[in-house]
Structures are given as structure tokens and as C-alpha cells.
Amino acid sequence: MATMADVARSAGVSVATVSHVLNGTRPVLPHTRQAVLDAMDELGYTPNTLARSLVTSRTRSVGLAVSAISNPYFTEILQGVEAGALEHGYSLLIADPHDDPEHERKVVQLLHERRVDGMIVAPSADPRELLAYLGRHKVPTVLLDRLVDTPEDGPARFDQVCADSAGPMAQLVTHLAGLGHRRIGLVAGLPGLSTTSERLTGYREGLATAGLGYEERLVVHGDSESAGAEQATAALLSLDSPPTALVTANNAMTIGALRALRGHGMSVPGDIALCCFDDFAWADLFSPRLTAIAQPSREIGAQAVRVLLDRLAEPDRPARTLRLPCAFVHRTSCGCPEQPLPSVEGTVS
Image 1 (cartoon, rainbow, N blue to C red):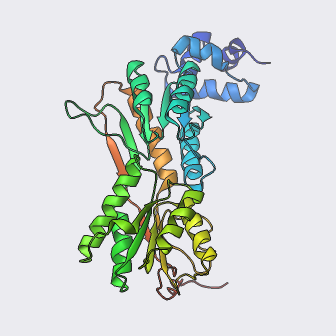
Image 2: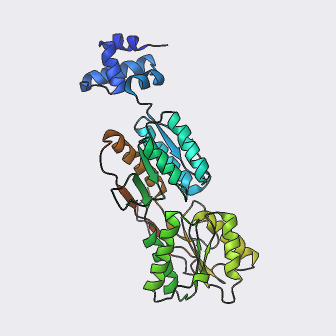
Image 3: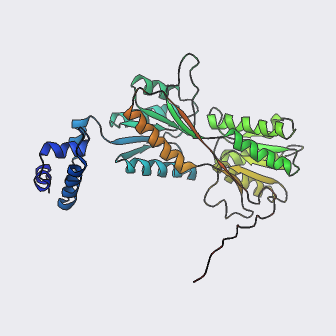
């Protein structure tokens, strides 16, 4: 197995120069750096990560704590985080907090004890212990998808990256209202999550824009899960005057709502129109095809890595919150006719 000394001899430099190239501990001339990299490649040299961490006090690893990793939305976020980390030479350690505040704090502590350089975390509905731990230990952290309130008596404590929620939800509601619906139900997420409160705000804004009143009975909580959404949707359908249109606030709850509608023998959009927050790979394969809000999930993950690396480079920089735009994907579950595919001009050879 090749050693650092072998690389130094092959590149015609000192062992110290090879160390500086590997660890970034001192600037190295571009042609010298390339000679070292070429020698490493030729000799098949593999750096000793443990030894490097002792020199730099960095492990070049990132901890990711995200619940419901099986959810396609978070899976795509994970892919964005992984790609971004790998691009910058970082490995990824992953934990699932299961949306449980106590378990959340424990898994973050375990990641911290592994000496990750920083963390990316999607906080639970009650992240007080989590935030206290991160703040007490000054762990470089980016909060993902779900935001926390900024203290009234000071600046934001953590960097945050998420998609816009209120505006896109309002767009779904006004779209349904424009189709003539006056009773629009909402299957909302887990109370306490910023995504839940923001999408509820967007729902109310959409009703107001359409000149419709807010009716509390038309809002039920599916707790961001399929089973909860199935029960919540069944409750909506049992009302004396049930909704004629339904909006679900995430992809897992869309599945639960569809189960409930099928159980009641209702067709979409014939008996009830349906729009959903979160597009996913098979939304285009349903019959009817699902009208949805598509979040830029992979870009959210990639941006979280960039923000974390900025934080590692400048620990004292002010915290920032990035909100990425969503896209309205117009299909047929809302009751609209099939949209024609755009024509593609080209030549055949």
C-alpha cells in the first residue's frame, strides 16, 4: 500500500507539501498540487481519514437527521444532501429522529459524538431540547424544511433552508375556487410543524382571495401520515355538507386521502376534486393524474450543504434563511381537462 512518503517521492515534493494538499492547511501552487494529485492517482494512494482529522480537527463528515427517510420527499432531499456533500469531499452520517423530540435530541447527540463537522436537521414539532443542545455545544447546524421561530430579543440562531409553503398552498385553493368549488377541505399536517402552520395560512389566504369564508370544520389534521390522513378524510366525508374539493398538505397524506375516498366509493374528480402539496414520481401515473405543488427537494438538500459549508468557513457570519420557490404542476385530478403536451420541433435524420 502506497504511503504519503511514496507520493512525495513520485511528485518530487516534501511530505509536508503532500500533507498541505490533502488537508488544505496551507496554499500550494496549482502545478505542485496537480503533481501531488497525479502521483496519488498513479500510486493508488488512499488518504488516512483518521490521521487527517487529527491534523485538521475536522472529520470532513456531515450529520443528517431527518425523519421519515422512506418518504419520497425526504429521500430526494437526502439525495441532494449526499450529492452536495460528496462534491465537496464530505461523507454523510444519517439518523432518523422519528419525529420524536426525545429521540431527536439523542440521535443528534450521537452524531455530535461522532465528531461530525456540522449537522443538517429537519426539526420535530417540539425542538426545544434539540435547539438547546445545538446551541449549548455550538454545533454548526442548518435546519431543513421545517423552520423555527426567530427569538424576539435577538438575531436568528440557526441557518435554515426550506421551500415556500403559504403561497403555493393559496394557489391550489384559488385554482379550485376558480373551478366553482365553494367548500374546499384541507387535510393538514402535524400540529407544531412550521410547514403545517404555513400551509394552513396559505389555505386561509386562498379562501380570502377567492371571497370564501373560513370554516373550521373543513380543516382536519392527518398528522403528516397516511393512516392519519385516511381517518381525517373520512371525518370530512361524514359531514352533513362535505367538501366538493380537497387539498392534502403532503404526499403521504395524499395516499391516505385516496384510500378514504376509495373506501367511500368516491371518484376523483367526478365526485370530488383533489389537489396535493408535494409532487412525487408516481403522481403522474394515477388515474386521474394528480394536480400538485412540486417542491425543489433535491435543491433544498444541495443548498443546505452549501449553507453549512459557508457556516464552517465563516462561523461568525449572521444566520440566514433561504426559501426556494415551488412549481404548480397542472394535471387532471382538480377536474380540469388534460393539458396538451408542448410540441417539440426537430428534424429526423
